Image (tube, rainbow, N blue to C red):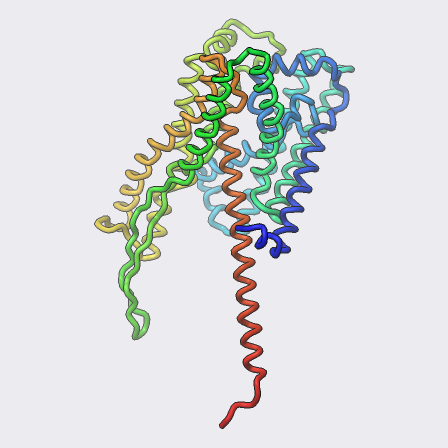
Amino acid sequence: MSWGALGKATELRQRIFFTVGLLIVYRLGTYIPVPGIDGGALRDFMEQASAGIGGILTMFTGGALGRMGIFALGIMPYISASIIIQLLSSMVPQLEQLKKEGEQGRKKINQMTRYGTVFLATFQAYGLAVSLESGGLAHDPGWFFRAAVLITLVGGTMFLMWLGEQITARGVGNGISLIIFVGIIAEVPAALAQFLASGRSGAISPVVIIGILLMMVGLVAFVVFMERALRKIHIQYPRRQVGMKVYDGGSSHLPVKVNPAGVIPAIFASSLLLLPTTIATFSGGNTGPVMSTILAYFGPGQPLYLLFFASMIIFFTYFYTLNVSFKVDDVADNLKNQNGFVPGIRPGKKTAEYLEYVVIRVLALGSGYLALVALLPEILRNQLSIPFYFGGTSVLIVVSVTMDTIQQVQSHLLAHQYEGLIEKSNLRGKKRTRKGPSRR
Protein backbone atom coordinates (compact mmCIF):
# COMPACT_ATOMS: atom_id res chain seq x y z
CA MET A 1 0.00 0.00 0.00
CA SER A 2 1.66 3.24 -1.21
CA TRP A 3 0.67 6.66 -2.52
CA GLY A 4 2.00 5.76 -5.97
CA ALA A 5 -0.21 2.68 -6.21
CA LEU A 6 -3.18 4.69 -4.90
CA GLY A 7 -2.62 7.34 -7.58
CA LYS A 8 -2.72 4.76 -10.36
CA ALA A 9 -5.88 3.05 -9.09
CA THR A 10 -8.47 5.36 -10.71
CA GLU A 11 -11.52 3.35 -9.68
CA LEU A 12 -10.39 3.16 -6.04
CA ARG A 13 -9.78 6.92 -6.00
CA GLN A 14 -13.30 7.54 -7.29
CA ARG A 15 -14.73 5.23 -4.65
CA ILE A 16 -12.86 7.11 -1.91
CA PHE A 17 -14.10 10.51 -3.17
CA PHE A 18 -17.66 9.14 -3.35
CA THR A 19 -17.43 7.85 0.23
CA VAL A 20 -16.00 11.11 1.57
CA GLY A 21 -18.69 13.12 -0.25
CA LEU A 22 -21.56 11.16 1.29
CA LEU A 23 -19.99 11.35 4.74
CA ILE A 24 -19.79 15.15 4.36
CA VAL A 25 -23.51 15.15 3.51
CA TYR A 26 -24.12 13.22 6.74
CA ARG A 27 -22.11 15.69 8.81
CA LEU A 28 -23.95 18.67 7.31
CA GLY A 29 -27.28 17.04 8.16
CA THR A 30 -26.39 16.88 11.84
CA TYR A 31 -26.51 20.70 11.96
CA ILE A 32 -30.02 21.03 10.43
CA PRO A 33 -32.40 21.42 13.42
CA VAL A 34 -35.75 19.73 13.94
CA PRO A 35 -38.59 22.29 13.59
CA GLY A 36 -40.49 23.62 16.58
CA ILE A 37 -37.73 23.38 19.24
CA ASP A 38 -36.60 26.12 21.62
CA GLY A 39 -32.86 26.17 21.01
CA GLY A 40 -32.06 28.22 24.10
CA ALA A 41 -33.23 25.58 26.60
CA LEU A 42 -32.04 22.60 24.56
CA ARG A 43 -28.51 22.46 25.96
CA ASP A 44 -29.67 22.40 29.59
CA PHE A 45 -32.11 19.59 28.86
CA MET A 46 -29.50 17.47 27.08
CA GLU A 47 -27.11 17.83 30.03
CA GLN A 48 -29.80 16.47 32.36
CA ALA A 49 -30.73 13.65 29.96
CA SER A 50 -27.15 12.65 29.10
CA ALA A 51 -27.38 9.54 31.29
CA GLY A 52 -30.46 8.33 29.43
CA ILE A 53 -31.27 9.18 25.83
CA GLY A 54 -28.09 11.22 25.51
CA GLY A 55 -25.83 8.32 26.45
CA ILE A 56 -25.36 5.75 23.73
CA LEU A 57 -27.37 7.73 21.14
CA THR A 58 -25.02 10.72 21.32
CA MET A 59 -22.08 8.41 20.70
CA PHE A 60 -23.70 7.10 17.50
CA THR A 61 -25.01 10.47 16.22
CA GLY A 62 -21.87 12.60 16.25
CA GLY A 63 -23.45 15.31 18.42
CA ALA A 64 -26.67 15.50 16.35
CA LEU A 65 -28.73 14.54 19.40
CA GLY A 66 -27.30 17.42 21.46
CA ARG A 67 -28.10 19.87 18.64
CA MET A 68 -31.42 18.10 17.95
CA GLY A 69 -30.63 17.76 14.25
CA ILE A 70 -32.61 15.78 11.70
CA PHE A 71 -30.17 12.87 12.22
CA ALA A 72 -30.65 12.93 16.01
CA LEU A 73 -31.53 9.21 16.13
CA GLY A 74 -28.55 8.37 13.94
CA ILE A 75 -28.24 4.88 12.50
CA MET A 76 -28.88 3.15 15.84
CA PRO A 77 -32.44 1.94 14.97
CA TYR A 78 -31.09 0.18 11.87
CA ILE A 79 -28.30 -1.47 13.88
CA SER A 80 -30.76 -2.64 16.54
CA ALA A 81 -33.14 -4.00 13.89
CA SER A 82 -30.30 -5.81 12.11
CA ILE A 83 -29.13 -7.46 15.32
CA ILE A 84 -32.67 -8.49 16.28
CA ILE A 85 -33.31 -9.99 12.83
CA GLN A 86 -30.00 -11.88 12.98
CA LEU A 87 -30.86 -13.33 16.37
CA LEU A 88 -34.37 -14.27 15.25
CA SER A 89 -33.04 -15.88 12.06
CA SER A 90 -30.95 -18.24 14.18
CA MET A 91 -33.92 -19.24 16.35
CA VAL A 92 -36.97 -19.11 14.02
CA PRO A 93 -36.97 -21.94 11.42
CA GLN A 94 -38.78 -19.86 8.78
CA LEU A 95 -36.19 -17.08 8.90
CA GLU A 96 -33.36 -19.60 8.97
CA GLN A 97 -34.75 -21.14 5.78
CA LEU A 98 -34.81 -17.68 4.17
CA LYS A 99 -31.08 -17.30 4.82
CA LYS A 100 -30.44 -20.48 2.84
CA GLU A 101 -32.41 -19.31 -0.22
CA GLY A 102 -29.56 -17.21 -1.57
CA GLU A 103 -30.09 -13.76 -3.07
CA GLN A 104 -33.89 -13.90 -2.90
CA GLY A 105 -33.87 -14.79 0.79
CA ARG A 106 -31.33 -12.07 1.53
CA LYS A 107 -33.58 -9.46 -0.10
CA LYS A 108 -36.54 -10.57 2.03
CA ILE A 109 -34.43 -10.38 5.22
CA ASN A 110 -33.22 -6.90 4.24
CA GLN A 111 -36.84 -5.83 3.72
CA MET A 112 -37.75 -7.11 7.19
CA THR A 113 -34.79 -5.18 8.61
CA ARG A 114 -36.04 -1.98 6.99
CA TYR A 115 -39.53 -2.47 8.42
CA GLY A 116 -37.97 -3.10 11.84
CA THR A 117 -35.92 0.09 11.46
CA VAL A 118 -39.07 2.14 10.77
CA PHE A 119 -40.80 0.62 13.83
CA LEU A 120 -37.88 1.22 16.22
CA ALA A 121 -37.21 4.72 14.85
CA THR A 122 -40.90 5.62 15.27
CA PHE A 123 -40.90 4.40 18.87
CA GLN A 124 -37.68 6.28 19.74
CA ALA A 125 -38.75 9.45 17.92
CA TYR A 126 -42.09 9.55 19.75
CA GLY A 127 -40.36 9.05 23.09
CA LEU A 128 -37.92 11.83 22.22
CA ALA A 129 -40.80 14.17 21.27
CA VAL A 130 -42.53 13.48 24.61
CA SER A 131 -39.25 14.16 26.42
CA LEU A 132 -38.84 17.47 24.61
CA GLU A 133 -42.36 18.49 25.54
CA SER A 134 -41.94 17.51 29.21
CA GLY A 135 -38.66 19.46 29.30
CA GLY A 136 -40.35 22.62 28.04
CA LEU A 137 -38.37 22.71 24.80
CA ALA A 138 -41.30 22.85 22.35
CA HIS A 139 -42.55 26.24 21.16
CA ASP A 140 -46.04 24.85 20.57
CA PRO A 141 -46.51 21.49 22.39
CA GLY A 142 -49.14 19.13 21.09
CA TRP A 143 -49.78 16.45 18.52
CA PHE A 144 -48.67 18.67 15.64
CA PHE A 145 -45.24 19.07 17.26
CA ARG A 146 -45.02 15.34 17.96
CA ALA A 147 -45.93 14.52 14.35
CA ALA A 148 -43.32 16.98 13.03
CA VAL A 149 -40.59 15.46 15.22
CA LEU A 150 -41.71 11.94 14.31
CA ILE A 151 -41.65 12.52 10.54
CA THR A 152 -38.37 14.43 10.62
CA LEU A 153 -36.42 11.98 12.76
CA VAL A 154 -37.75 8.81 11.10
CA GLY A 155 -37.05 10.32 7.67
CA GLY A 156 -33.52 11.25 8.78
CA THR A 157 -32.83 7.70 9.96
CA MET A 158 -34.10 6.17 6.72
CA PHE A 159 -32.00 8.63 4.69
CA LEU A 160 -28.92 7.61 6.73
CA MET A 161 -29.71 3.96 6.05
CA TRP A 162 -29.84 4.74 2.30
CA LEU A 163 -26.54 6.64 2.55
CA GLY A 164 -24.92 3.65 4.23
CA GLU A 165 -26.14 1.27 1.54
CA GLN A 166 -24.81 3.56 -1.21
CA ILE A 167 -21.38 3.76 0.45
CA THR A 168 -21.24 -0.02 0.79
CA ALA A 169 -22.23 -0.57 -2.86
CA ARG A 170 -20.29 2.22 -4.59
CA GLY A 171 -17.70 3.37 -2.07
CA VAL A 172 -15.05 1.87 0.21
CA GLY A 173 -15.81 0.06 3.46
CA ASN A 174 -19.07 -0.71 5.22
CA GLY A 175 -21.31 2.34 4.96
CA ILE A 176 -23.19 1.88 8.24
CA SER A 177 -19.96 1.36 10.18
CA LEU A 178 -18.33 4.41 8.55
CA ILE A 179 -21.29 6.63 9.51
CA ILE A 180 -20.90 5.56 13.15
CA PHE A 181 -17.12 5.98 12.87
CA VAL A 182 -17.40 9.55 11.56
CA GLY A 183 -19.94 10.43 14.25
CA ILE A 184 -17.54 9.29 16.98
CA ILE A 185 -14.43 10.86 15.46
CA ALA A 186 -16.22 14.21 14.98
CA GLU A 187 -16.57 14.59 18.76
CA VAL A 188 -12.94 13.71 19.56
CA PRO A 189 -11.34 17.17 18.91
CA ALA A 190 -13.82 18.99 21.19
CA ALA A 191 -13.42 16.38 23.95
CA LEU A 192 -9.63 16.48 23.65
CA ALA A 193 -9.61 20.30 23.78
CA GLN A 194 -11.83 20.24 26.88
CA PHE A 195 -9.55 17.66 28.49
CA LEU A 196 -6.41 19.72 27.83
CA ALA A 197 -8.17 22.91 28.95
CA SER A 198 -8.97 21.31 32.31
CA GLY A 199 -5.27 20.51 32.66
CA ARG A 200 -4.31 24.06 31.77
CA SER A 201 -6.67 25.43 34.40
CA GLY A 202 -5.11 23.19 37.07
CA ALA A 203 -8.11 20.91 37.58
CA ILE A 204 -6.03 17.92 36.42
CA SER A 205 -2.30 17.48 36.98
CA PRO A 206 0.00 17.11 33.95
CA VAL A 207 1.04 13.65 35.18
CA VAL A 208 -2.56 12.43 34.99
CA ILE A 209 -2.97 13.89 31.49
CA ILE A 210 0.18 12.17 30.22
CA GLY A 211 -0.86 8.93 31.93
CA ILE A 212 -4.32 8.95 30.33
CA LEU A 213 -2.90 9.71 26.87
CA LEU A 214 -0.40 6.84 27.21
CA MET A 215 -3.16 4.57 28.45
CA MET A 216 -5.28 5.48 25.40
CA VAL A 217 -2.42 4.53 23.07
CA GLY A 218 -1.93 1.27 24.96
CA LEU A 219 -5.68 0.55 24.89
CA VAL A 220 -5.84 1.04 21.11
CA ALA A 221 -2.81 -1.23 20.61
CA PHE A 222 -4.40 -3.86 22.88
CA VAL A 223 -7.68 -3.73 20.93
CA VAL A 224 -5.84 -4.10 17.61
CA PHE A 225 -3.90 -7.09 18.95
CA MET A 226 -7.01 -8.82 20.30
CA GLU A 227 -9.09 -8.14 17.17
CA ARG A 228 -6.41 -9.82 15.05
CA ALA A 229 -5.87 -12.73 17.45
CA LEU A 230 -6.88 -16.16 16.10
CA ARG A 231 -7.07 -19.74 17.28
CA LYS A 232 -6.22 -21.95 14.29
CA ILE A 233 -7.76 -25.43 14.16
CA HIS A 234 -5.87 -27.85 11.91
CA ILE A 235 -8.04 -29.34 9.12
CA GLN A 236 -6.92 -32.34 7.03
CA TYR A 237 -8.27 -33.36 3.61
CA PRO A 238 -7.88 -37.01 2.48
CA ARG A 239 -6.28 -38.26 -0.72
CA ARG A 240 -8.81 -38.43 -3.57
CA GLN A 241 -8.94 -39.94 -7.04
CA VAL A 242 -10.39 -38.11 -10.05
CA GLY A 243 -10.48 -40.36 -13.10
CA MET A 244 -7.07 -41.94 -13.50
CA LYS A 245 -5.29 -39.30 -11.40
CA VAL A 246 -4.71 -39.50 -7.63
CA TYR A 247 -4.39 -36.20 -5.76
CA ASP A 248 -2.57 -36.06 -2.44
CA GLY A 249 -4.49 -34.86 0.57
CA GLY A 250 -3.95 -31.30 1.72
CA SER A 251 -4.23 -29.47 5.01
CA SER A 252 -5.43 -26.05 6.07
CA HIS A 253 -6.53 -24.16 9.16
CA LEU A 254 -9.95 -23.11 10.40
CA PRO A 255 -9.51 -19.67 12.02
CA VAL A 256 -11.52 -18.92 15.17
CA LYS A 257 -11.31 -15.26 16.22
CA VAL A 258 -10.83 -14.49 19.89
CA ASN A 259 -13.70 -12.01 19.53
CA PRO A 260 -16.06 -13.35 16.82
CA ALA A 261 -19.01 -11.21 18.03
CA GLY A 262 -17.29 -7.87 17.43
CA VAL A 263 -18.75 -4.86 19.24
CA ILE A 264 -22.35 -6.17 19.27
CA PRO A 265 -22.30 -7.49 22.90
CA ALA A 266 -21.17 -4.09 24.19
CA ILE A 267 -23.92 -2.32 22.21
CA PHE A 268 -26.60 -4.68 23.52
CA ALA A 269 -25.40 -4.41 27.12
CA SER A 270 -25.25 -0.59 26.91
CA SER A 271 -28.79 -0.45 25.52
CA LEU A 272 -30.15 -2.62 28.35
CA LEU A 273 -28.40 -0.53 31.01
CA LEU A 274 -29.71 2.73 29.53
CA LEU A 275 -33.29 1.44 29.43
CA PRO A 276 -34.29 2.47 33.03
CA THR A 277 -32.86 6.00 32.73
CA THR A 278 -34.36 6.41 29.26
CA ILE A 279 -37.82 5.38 30.52
CA ALA A 280 -37.45 7.83 33.39
CA THR A 281 -36.54 10.59 30.92
CA PHE A 282 -39.50 9.78 28.66
CA SER A 283 -41.85 9.93 31.65
CA GLY A 284 -40.76 13.49 32.34
CA GLY A 285 -39.08 12.72 35.64
CA ASN A 286 -42.27 11.41 37.31
CA THR A 287 -40.72 8.21 38.61
CA GLY A 288 -42.12 6.01 41.36
CA PRO A 289 -40.21 4.56 44.33
CA VAL A 290 -39.32 1.36 42.45
CA MET A 291 -37.86 3.23 39.46
CA SER A 292 -36.02 5.63 41.78
CA THR A 293 -34.40 2.67 43.58
CA ILE A 294 -33.38 1.11 40.26
CA LEU A 295 -31.88 4.39 39.09
CA ALA A 296 -29.98 4.76 42.36
CA TYR A 297 -28.38 1.30 42.22
CA PHE A 298 -27.94 1.02 38.45
CA GLY A 299 -26.70 4.54 37.76
CA PRO A 300 -23.50 4.92 35.71
CA GLY A 301 -20.43 4.05 37.77
CA GLN A 302 -22.28 2.23 40.55
CA PRO A 303 -20.94 -1.26 41.54
CA LEU A 304 -24.15 -3.02 40.47
CA TYR A 305 -24.05 -1.13 37.16
CA LEU A 306 -20.48 -2.30 36.47
CA LEU A 307 -21.25 -5.88 37.54
CA PHE A 308 -24.39 -6.08 35.40
CA PHE A 309 -22.58 -4.46 32.45
CA ALA A 310 -19.77 -7.05 32.57
CA SER A 311 -22.24 -9.95 32.99
CA MET A 312 -24.34 -8.82 30.02
CA ILE A 313 -21.28 -8.41 27.79
CA ILE A 314 -20.09 -11.94 28.64
CA PHE A 315 -23.58 -13.41 28.13
CA PHE A 316 -24.16 -11.70 24.75
CA THR A 317 -20.66 -12.66 23.57
CA TYR A 318 -21.40 -16.36 24.07
CA PHE A 319 -25.00 -16.11 22.87
CA TYR A 320 -24.29 -14.16 19.66
CA THR A 321 -21.20 -16.19 18.73
CA LEU A 322 -22.73 -19.64 19.21
CA ASN A 323 -26.09 -18.71 17.62
CA VAL A 324 -25.13 -16.30 14.82
CA SER A 325 -21.49 -15.67 13.95
CA PHE A 326 -20.02 -19.17 14.52
CA LYS A 327 -22.63 -21.94 14.55
CA VAL A 328 -20.63 -25.09 15.27
CA ASP A 329 -23.19 -27.46 13.71
CA ASP A 330 -23.12 -25.60 10.38
CA VAL A 331 -19.31 -25.44 10.38
CA ALA A 332 -19.07 -29.19 11.11
CA ASP A 333 -21.55 -29.98 8.30
CA ASN A 334 -19.59 -27.82 5.83
CA LEU A 335 -16.36 -29.60 6.73
CA LYS A 336 -18.04 -32.98 6.30
CA ASN A 337 -19.42 -32.00 2.88
CA GLN A 338 -15.94 -30.90 1.78
CA ASN A 339 -14.39 -34.16 3.07
CA GLY A 340 -12.40 -32.24 5.64
CA PHE A 341 -11.84 -33.42 9.19
CA VAL A 342 -9.98 -32.51 12.35
CA PRO A 343 -7.17 -35.06 12.92
CA GLY A 344 -8.25 -37.54 15.60
CA ILE A 345 -11.91 -36.36 15.56
CA ARG A 346 -14.73 -38.09 13.70
CA PRO A 347 -16.66 -35.95 11.19
CA GLY A 348 -20.18 -34.84 12.06
CA LYS A 349 -21.41 -34.69 15.65
CA LYS A 350 -18.00 -35.33 17.25
CA THR A 351 -16.48 -32.48 15.21
CA ALA A 352 -19.28 -30.14 16.29
CA GLU A 353 -18.67 -31.06 19.94
CA TYR A 354 -14.93 -30.46 19.55
CA LEU A 355 -15.50 -27.09 17.87
CA GLU A 356 -17.90 -26.07 20.64
CA TYR A 357 -15.30 -27.11 23.21
CA VAL A 358 -12.66 -24.92 21.54
CA VAL A 359 -14.94 -21.93 20.90
CA ILE A 360 -16.27 -21.82 24.48
CA ARG A 361 -12.71 -21.69 25.86
CA VAL A 362 -11.60 -19.09 23.33
CA LEU A 363 -14.63 -16.96 24.20
CA ALA A 364 -13.60 -16.98 27.86
CA LEU A 365 -10.67 -14.80 26.78
CA GLY A 366 -12.67 -12.82 24.19
CA SER A 367 -15.56 -11.94 26.51
CA GLY A 368 -13.15 -10.96 29.29
CA TYR A 369 -11.30 -8.68 26.87
CA LEU A 370 -14.56 -7.02 25.76
CA ALA A 371 -15.70 -6.48 29.35
CA LEU A 372 -12.32 -5.00 30.32
CA VAL A 373 -12.25 -2.54 27.42
CA ALA A 374 -15.86 -1.48 28.04
CA LEU A 375 -15.51 -1.11 31.83
CA LEU A 376 -12.13 0.62 32.04
CA PRO A 377 -13.40 4.09 30.93
CA GLU A 378 -16.42 3.76 33.25
CA ILE A 379 -14.17 3.04 36.24
CA LEU A 380 -11.83 5.92 35.41
CA ARG A 381 -14.69 8.34 34.89
CA ASN A 382 -16.80 7.55 37.94
CA GLN A 383 -14.80 5.69 40.56
CA LEU A 384 -11.52 7.57 40.21
CA SER A 385 -13.07 10.91 39.13
CA ILE A 386 -10.88 11.12 36.03
CA PRO A 387 -12.58 12.90 33.09
CA PHE A 388 -12.23 10.13 30.50
CA TYR A 389 -14.32 11.27 27.52
CA PHE A 390 -14.10 8.17 25.32
CA GLY A 391 -16.22 5.11 26.02
CA GLY A 392 -14.90 1.60 25.58
CA THR A 393 -17.56 0.82 22.97
CA SER A 394 -16.52 3.82 20.88
CA VAL A 395 -12.85 2.73 21.01
CA LEU A 396 -13.83 -0.76 19.83
CA ILE A 397 -15.90 0.66 16.96
CA VAL A 398 -13.22 3.11 15.81
CA VAL A 399 -10.45 0.51 15.81
CA SER A 400 -12.57 -2.21 14.14
CA VAL A 401 -13.89 0.09 11.39
CA THR A 402 -10.41 1.49 10.70
CA MET A 403 -8.92 -2.00 10.35
CA ASP A 404 -11.77 -3.17 8.11
CA THR A 405 -11.57 -0.10 5.83
CA ILE A 406 -7.79 -0.36 5.46
CA GLN A 407 -8.15 -4.05 4.60
CA GLN A 408 -10.72 -3.24 1.90
CA VAL A 409 -8.50 -0.51 0.42
CA GLN A 410 -5.60 -2.98 0.27
CA SER A 411 -7.87 -5.53 -1.43
CA HIS A 412 -8.84 -2.97 -4.10
CA LEU A 413 -5.17 -2.08 -4.65
CA LEU A 414 -4.23 -5.74 -4.94
CA ALA A 415 -7.00 -6.35 -7.46
CA HIS A 416 -5.84 -3.32 -9.47
CA GLN A 417 -2.26 -4.65 -9.53
CA TYR A 418 -3.46 -8.05 -10.74
CA GLU A 419 -5.51 -6.41 -13.49
CA GLY A 420 -2.42 -4.49 -14.59
CA LEU A 421 -0.33 -7.67 -14.71
CA ILE A 422 -3.01 -9.47 -16.75
CA GLU A 423 -3.21 -6.59 -19.23
CA LYS A 424 0.59 -6.55 -19.65
CA SER A 425 0.71 -10.30 -20.23
CA ASN A 426 -2.05 -10.04 -22.84
CA LEU A 427 -0.22 -7.23 -24.66
CA ARG A 428 3.01 -9.22 -24.69
CA GLY A 429 1.19 -12.23 -26.07
CA LYS A 430 -0.29 -10.11 -28.88
CA LYS A 431 3.12 -8.67 -29.77
CA ARG A 432 4.59 -12.16 -30.07
CA THR A 433 1.82 -13.26 -32.43
CA ARG A 434 2.43 -10.24 -34.69
CA LYS A 435 6.01 -11.27 -35.53
CA GLY A 436 6.94 -12.54 -38.97
CA PRO A 437 5.64 -15.84 -40.39
CA SER A 438 6.95 -18.94 -38.74
CA ARG A 439 9.37 -21.10 -40.65
CA ARG A 440 8.21 -24.47 -41.77
